[in-house]
Structures are given as C-alpha cells and as structure tokens.
Length: 634
Image (cartoon, rainbow, N blue to C red; front, side, top):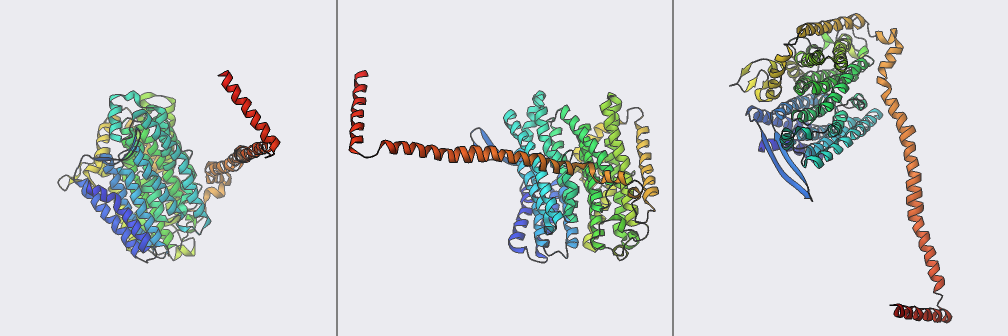
C-alpha cells in the first residue's frame, strides 16, 4: 500500500518542487520530472510483479449528515493493466520530451505539467470509488488545459486549450449527475460495494444512471458529439499529444467504462448506445483523416477512430476494449513520438506533403514508424492485429448470432473503419518517408538524438510484441513475466480472451470473415499506394475531388454548428435571461423595488409624525381609544 501511495503522490511532489524552485532552471525541472517518472515506473512494475491479486484501502475524508466522502485506493487486475500502460508509456514519453523540448525556454513549466498529469492520471487508475475518480478526472482536465496551452503566445494553442476544457466540462456535468444519482440509489459509489450490490440484485442497475455516467466517457474519450476538441488539441507540444491524446488521458474514459461494465453497472441499453456511438466514430473519423494534411491531425483522427473501436468493444465485450486500449497505447504513442521526431528534424514543418524521402535521412524514426504503422493497420503478428481483430470478430459473431439489422450496421461500420485505417496511414507513410524530399526542410532533416530515439525503439518493440503477452503462453522470470508485460497485468484481458475467443472461433464462417478483413487490409494498403504513393507532394484527393476533400476536411461541420449555436442561440438566451432575471427581477424589482417601497413607507410615516402639538394630541387620544377598545372587547 505504501508503494501505491508513492506512485500516486511522487509526481505531485515533483510538480510542486519544479513550480516552486526549478521553473526557470534549464535542466533541473526536466531531471526531477523524469526521475519521478522512472521511480514510479519501477515501483509500478514491482507492485505488478508481486502478483498481488487485490489491494484496497479506504477512509472517511468528511461526513455531512448521511453523506460521507471516502478516499481510498483500489488495485486489482484491471488496475494493474492500466497502471502498467500509464507508468511505462508515461516514463518513455518523459524521456522523449527531454530531447524534444531542449530549446524551449519554458521547459520547467512543461515538465511540471507532465508530472501533475501523471499524478492525476494515476489517481483515476487507483481510485476506489466514483467520487474520488471524479476528483482526479477534473485534475486531468486541468492538466490537459495547461499542457495544451503551453504555447500560449499562439492563438491556436489558447483557443484549443479553452475548447478542450469547456467541451470536457459539458460531458463531466452529466458524469457528476450520474455519480450523485448512483449515491442516492445505492448509498455508495465504492466499486467493490457496487459490485456486491449489483451481484445480489442485478435489477438495481439503471439505464439512466449509466447514460449519465457515459457522458464523462463521451467527453474525455472524444466520442460523438463531443469529439471536436481532440484534433484542435494538437496545438500543444507533440509529447503532450502522445501522452494525453493517444496513450492515457483519452483512454481514461474507456478505462472507467470497462471498470463499470465488469461489475455489471452498465445495462444492455447503455452498452448498445456505447456500441453504436463507437462504431460510428470509428468509421467517420477514418474518413475525416483523409481530409487532413497536418501529420498530427491525421494521427488525431486516427485516435478518434480507434477510440470508437474501443467504445464498440465495450458493448461487444469489455475485455476486447481493454485489450485494444493497451496495444493502441503502444503503437499510437510511437506514431505521435515519430511525428514529434519528424517535426523537430524538419524545423516544425507539419504538412505531410512537404516532407518525403525521410527513410534515408532518419532511419531509426522511419523503421519505428513502419513498425507502428503495420501494427495500427493490423498486419498479423503485430500488436494491433490481435486487439483489432478480436473486436471485429466479436462484432461478426454478434451479428451472426442475433441476425438483427442493428448488429449488421455496427459490423459494417467497424469493418469500414478498419478498411480506412491502411488508406489514411498509407497516405501518411508514403508521403512522409518515401519518394524525394518535397521541401528544403525535409532535404536537411537529420535523425534525432538518443533521448528521442531510445523511447521510439522501446515503444516500437512493444508495438510489435506487446500483444503477444495476452495471446501467447510465453512465460519467464518464474512465470511473473508474460512475454514483454508482467503476467498479473495480463490477467484481466488474458482470462477474458481465453473464455470468449474460443467460443467466437466456433461460429460458422468466422475464419472466412477473418481472411476477408485481412484481405481488405492489404487492399487498403494497395489503394493508398496507387492513389498517394507517387503523388510527389500533392494531395490527389484534393486535386481530383476538391468538394469531397472539403467535406472531409470540415469533419462534419461540428465546429460550425457549435459556433452557430453559441453565437445565435446560447448567447441570445443569455442576453434574454440577463434582461429578464438580472435587470428586471434582481436589479429593478429586488434592489431598486425594495428601495422605492422603503422610501414610500418612510415618507408615509414621516407625514404622520410631523412633531406638532396638535398631532401629538391626536395620536395620544387615538391610543387611549385603542387601549379602551382592547380592554372592553377582551
């Protein structure tokens, strides 16, 4: 338990030290932040390797009537999986940041933000109840706001940070209502206690409660209709994109939903809604990625697509979602760090059509990019293949078993999203790494230093073999390690896969479907090469079909719709309420009205008391008459 406390609070201590003493130091802040990250990663591995099945602590923070606020830690099999992802991937991104932020004058503030983010994210993973999770949920939102706004002197970063913060607050409002609803019904928000209550009385699980809780997932994991903040958040430093918007923060919503689904908290109706929203996001984001030229925005829409797959995986089987969350953290963190290495080498050029020919100039970055690309497009034996195919196979099984139109739509959207992945990733890879340089910046690009290359290599290895830990019986170190990941961190997903994949493979035609999806992957790669492989720094789609390109570039006009709503509807309602409530009711009636009434009453009493002898006699006589009347009638 002491080690879990250290994992939680050491990054907070690091952030405080940097802000108070090392904010202007050239290397001090980076050293402290990276040191805290490596210590947390080591302690997390020690806890996970100890094969501890479950650790739980709880104490009352305060009481108010019947309400009590509990704070505690919960470490179990799902927590072990997520803690490994957060601490190990987070540490590698910290190391990469040392090289990437080398010439940044505000690196102390940046590393303080990274440490505070690690504290907040660890709190979500180790929270024992929904209230505590919500507290750290909001701290993660603040961390994201601060890190996205690191380049606050640019308008894009300022607007993106505000947008991310506000959009997430919309989803978090529903999340908070769901938590309050949960406490009012169950009398607790503790995960272990909720699991016991729902196990004894499954009918107590509420669809409305689950939908409200789901709002937090929609905001944090950028699902319909609150996905608009994620692509703009690429205005922050690239390591922030890797840590927050690829590997951990956006996955917090998936983690929360998986934890609740595993205890039966989410009803079938809630799971169906999540499945539809996720599958729709998986397909639409894949299309929108084809309308982007910025390398980070292409990866951002790819993240949206794969978060959609994870969302669908929650409805299909929560273990599939957790599996894809893990492998996605490996290959998407690799791809974002690859983008950072390229941007750094090309002097902050981000247009993929102004790159080209980098395979010869940046071999380490290029090879890790190739590995991560093969993983994300689901080539067999790479990590992404196992997790993505498990979701697609489960969707096929559900459609085959139930035969409902709804399930076939989900299957079609997921297969469509999987088919689009090799197209937009091939578009990126062929234009960035192959061919000839399309700009002077690309011509003079050089491989990044060791601080940036070593994390790329490690993440590249995990992009290849990280998934093997869950699907292969490759145990070593006295059984404590399963391939590259500690065995106890693989238990939650591994046991789920063993119990479900065997049944899925018994479904007729399932192997034919798997071969079909694999064929679609290679067809997608071929299409990407034919359309984009020899375009020589030109966007073929933009030139041949500018209308289609513009539609994809506008990503559904969500920003325009929200801007119209804020300016034309919300602002006018605010003005109306200001006139009716503020000016009329508060200022005119309440403030000025009471003043006028008091003035009138005062003037009346003043006229009655004019201090003349005649007036005093009249009031004296009236008083005597009134007293005698009271005596007589009483």
